Image (tube, rainbow, N blue to C red; front, side):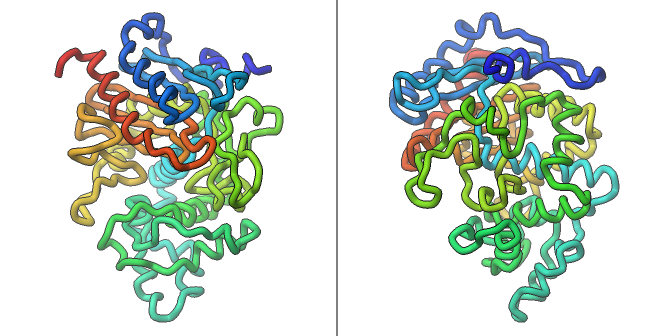
Length: 389
């Protein structure tokens, strides 16, 4: 069962006949990426995270596919394999919510300048009177670009006990800034965006994403709310002593998404690095076979406002001088991070993608060493491919 679910080769098999499979070209990876692999192994020794899975694609080929370390720091814990699924945390924002937004935009069912309140009128009607005018100005573009004025994060799970309660709490969360004036990464905004998309498709996010994104791309092991028999094969993210009072394994780490039963616009997705690599290749192919190149370019373009933002539509771009993508990813690159230790960076100028999945939140959320590890790994990969830059 485990080998069937987790083998990297299996996770790359297309589910439909019109998808060009990734070429397997990672036979020399240990030599070619020796420094990058060494950085990851040393990070495990330093307890940045107990394990990791790496997938690197270039020009349509999978050139690195490797697991490192174990599920936990225990010597008897299972080893991480190349196809081990991880909690993607906020990579859900691009692999699910942004992907669906691109599809609906392309099909004429989503207008970027459309107010959120057109589909979710309660965003205005349930708000205090003094905020209603500002809330009418919040658009889908602002939500995608994290410029809505909504706060970054709220512990809604502390008082919301059902999915409906939490959505209502997100809907009534006060603005912290005037819409369009400040870029502030917002889980709350993507919770609402996810609900808007589900309303427009008349379908839960997980069902629509599976049918319209993951199945066409051959992402066979990308799921919300993993089945019980899959959970033991997913590295645990945390020994939660604050909210659930148990080890979190095979269920979403994010508490707000947990109250939403594991399906949310901001978090909840699980996948192996090799499935994320398939999604990255879709973007590098200009969206084929599910999107048109013009749509992908539009969503990947850094927004002109608010001033100083590094955000594109759903995506982030390399922020200078310090970025998790390191020094060498081009200005055309897009990427995203996940709280549990996930990351994806895509460089269309190099036709390159790097997926690094970890459970850096094990056994708790205190370690921040991954902030040093990510840019080092990305730099080492590009330097291995291109020599001295």
